[in-house]
Length: 81
Image 1 (cartoon, rainbow, N blue to C red):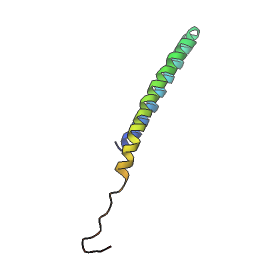
Image 2: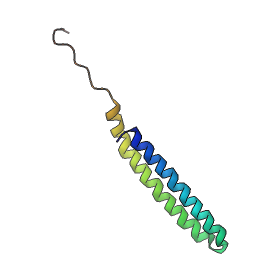
Image 3: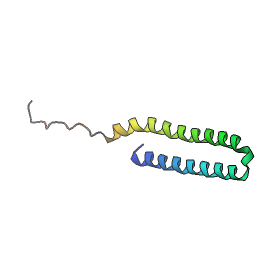
C-alpha cells in the first residue's frame, strides 16, 4: 500500500461521510418525528465508515514506512573500514 492507496481511502471515506450526512439530513427534513431514530442510524453508519478508514490507516501506515525507507547502501568492495 502506498501514499496513493491511503489517499484514495481517505477520499472514499470523505465521500461516504458526505453521502451519509446528506441522506440523514434529507430524512430528518422529510420526517421530523423520526429524528431520533434517523440520528442514531446515521451515527452508527458514520462510525462504521470511520472504523474502516482507521483500520486502513493502522494497517497501511506501518507498511508505508517500510516502503518509503531507503535501502542501506553497501560499501564498495575495495574499501576497508
